[in-house]
Every structure is written in C-alpha cells, then in structure tokens.
Image 1 (cartoon, one colour):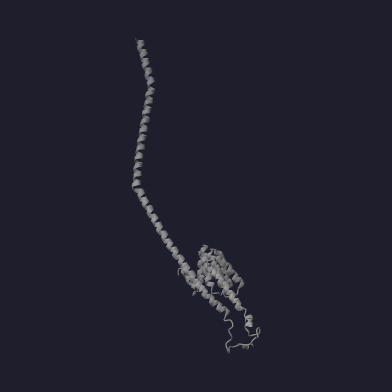
Image 2 (cartoon, one colour):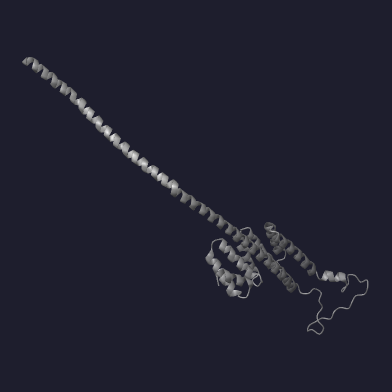
Length: 284
C-alpha cells in the first residue's frame, strides 16, 4: 500500500510539474489579451476624437476658411480692377504729355528755323549803316546776269538747303510720331550727320534720344542726350535733354544720380518747363 501511495504521489507531482508551464503560458496569453484590449480601447478613443475633430472642421473651420478665401478672391479682383484703371489713366496722361511735347517741338522748330535762317532775300533798310546800294534791275532777256532770277537762285543756295533740311527732319519726326522708333533713330542720326550746323540739329538729337528711351535703350539714350549737351550747350533743348537723362537714370536704378540731375535742371534753368517737371519729381 505504501508503495502504491508513493507511486500515486509521484504521479501527482509529475502531473503538477507538467501542468505548471501550461498555466504560466495561459497567464501570459491573458496578459497579452488584456494589453491588446487596452490598445484597442485607446485606438477607439483616438478614432472618436479624430471623428469629432473632423466634424468640427467640416462644420466650422472649413466654412470659415472657404469664406476667407472667397473674400480674398474678391479683394484681389477689386485690386486688379483698380490697377487697370490706374494703368489706363497713366497711359492717357503719358499720351497727352507726348502730344504736348510734339506740339511744343513743332512750334520751337519754326522759331529756330526762322531765327537761324533769317529772312532770305530781304534788302537792307534804307539809310542803315553800312548798307550797300542795291544793283539796278537788269535789262529784259539778260538771263544769268546779276539781278536776274537765275542768278539770284545761284547766289542763294541756302534756300534749297533749308528746304532739304526741313523735309529730312519732318520725315524723321513723322517716323517718331508713328512709333517707328528704329527708323526714327536712323533718320535723326543721318540728319545730324548731314546738317550738323542746322538749327534743327539739337532737336533731332533730342528726339533720337527719346526714341532710344522708348525702346528701353536707356544707356544709348543717355549717351545721345549727353552728346547734345556737349555739342550744342546753348540749345533750348538742353533742359529737356537733362530731364530725359534723369529718366534714364531712374530706369537704370541710379536714383541718386537722377536726383542730382533734377536738382541741376532746377538750378540752371529755373524758369524752363523741364524745371517745373523736375520740381514735381523732387517733391517740391
């Protein structure tokens, strides 16, 4: 009996020992399940919060955002409309200014031509100091003799030159007015080469520089206007040439030099139209 009891006890102990790892493994599985359930709970909580956040964004945030975007679009459209109006007004002002310049230049050309040429064929006033007696009229049929129309034409070649000068200048100026700036530049250059002493030469050089400015050749325009200053320092176009130089300096980003040029115009030519524009740019 004792032997049998010992055997049974041994079997029970073996069975207990054999069952212990299984219980340990069962304990580990329970812990893992608990952790998984806890993670699932946290995930569910996060999903709930995310859904609530999405609902808030959809119901309030996005609506406000979309409203702000629409308002910004409306403001941008309004600003674009204002910009178009300003650009149109600026273009119209520039056109009026250009037309005014062209009109003034046409009047100055007539004055300069009359001053430089005088009155062809005018006889000295009677009794004037140093006046020579007029030659007697030639007999009929004496063509080619002094006093005849043919001889007068040969004796005054300047009249023909003045007419040619005027035609050449007008042709170049018409090209400028029609905005054919490359052709105008070439024509004004040819005019100055052909008639360097003409009363219209400073104006030709000035408008050549303006044509270069219109083509955004600011350095070329400055060079042309400075050539005018050095070649024709007493011309009425000097203040306008300086004003064009100041504009070129602004376009090239040299605002300090442009300001000095404007101040020079005001100091040297205070009563000129260019000085008035210089004062406006200086803010005086």
